[in-house]
Image (cartoon, rainbow, N blue to C red; front, side, top):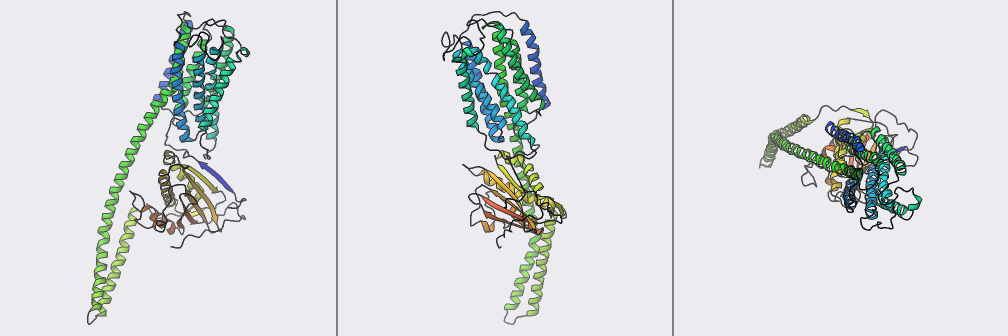
Length: 556
């Protein structure tokens, strides 16, 4: 295609706006979930003033308490990150990758916090820890997660700003993990080797410097409130709702931390209890909601299987009806043809009787054709209503309609559509049937591939000003060379459970519209289907630009 040809390049990962939701990332919360989350926040809001009014009683230090709780939260954060990374792969989401990396960073900082806590593994803590090292690490495991939530919201808005989902590269999960590890190492070095650069938070191993603690927690609260405000302003998903609950728990913990006076006090232990809750709430929500969505998808799959079985039974009934209705005139045609042949093969041929028999066979053949037409008319949706419409818009609409199938098989769709394409004159519903069939065949072919990207590329262009051409290529298993000449034949199929009617009907529909449909092998993998349709009476916006040369279909 010439470089000056006006083309809009649009790609997506099975994620046009669709009523079918496949994950916590795009599923809005229902009323029950919202009521439950609000109840949890209400409990936290009621508990905060109660804990603030309690006397800060000191207890005997328990050296193993902090490492034990840190290990528990570390494991929960790593599982949460793994679940978020899994969703990031499905949705190709930078936002989810950043959020998951925030949890990885939090987990690694928790590990450093456990090692440097005074009295846990050594009297002064490991890694060359000072008096304030563990306290600063305790602050640094909360601030990055809030910053990750802010980035998550920004990236999610950027992805949703475009009505058409642009092509996204594979989420850089390894890069996210390495970045989180690098930041965790840098934070640990800062608070160990450079602890003198930070404001002191403790006089000794137990007693706090209250003024500095309030200043630090005030900054943390500001970051938390900013993250919560950004989450509240955007259209919330189930994941957003539970992250918001976790941030609310973090906020309660920061406010409670402002009035703590020493380690191993009542307020100290209450803070750790809230911290455990804030770290686990997203994990528990991910597990519970993922199981619920899995059950819903399993039921949907079972319903689809039942519908397919019903269609197969209907097809059996249709074939029985065809055999019954067509059988009689065909039998008559064969009988009359044999009779005519018999009259001609006699020792004394009787041409008049043979001619009569042959004419009867011809009449029976015409009756057979009429029966077939009437059977087809029964299953037609109605008379063909030809209208002018944009083939580009129909391609986008069909891709959106098949969003769930594309996302379920992790198929990328790359659209390279000529926006100067003239409208076509055809029955929109029937042409969409053709596109759905081509999409479905490509998805099934890609489902059998391993070790390479699953991609469907669609390109539209003009053909010498007389029509439009749509090319759909995939990176699937392709078509065997010996099968290529027959793929459009009725009842020919390469699928174990196929009927062999889909592509045959597609070609019939296209040819009835005065168009062409043919297939060629892909350059490296898969196959390319070419759909050519006549243009309508409208003119292209890009008149005067040189169209692409016509691609001739193979001779049949």
